[in-house]
Length: 173
Image (cartoon, rainbow, N blue to C red; front, side, top):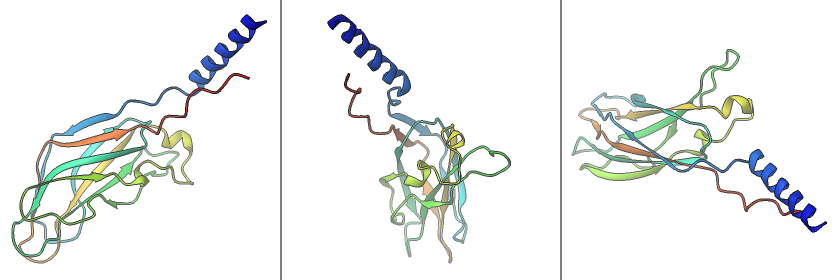
């Protein structure tokens, strides 16, 4: 009887592991392209599009960036999630600030949390569609007025983090 209980417990743990595979390990990607722009507006100018796998819950972006080096500081970084169309509907998110502050006048290393909206499924998007690989679109806002520019060095790193691990396998009955 004890052997039967042990076998049943092992089967329960194995079934739980199969139903809930371990989260993916953290993933770090390098963005090979930089950005250098002097547009005089508050539009989102494309910097990079990064194809990302499903299964991550948060992330950070580390950059080296600066503005024109004098005058008012206005430059910001933005991001949004884009998915392949699902039944004819676009399933992207709105643009979100990546940088809570504007760029400094000199080259600065900064690390920004990716917005939760890049990882949480909107109520109107089917789970099957949301839990697929997606594209993270990055953009730069230079700023209106005269003489503004924004620069981001190539080699920024994007680190994705899996959901927090569960407390462990279920206890056998």
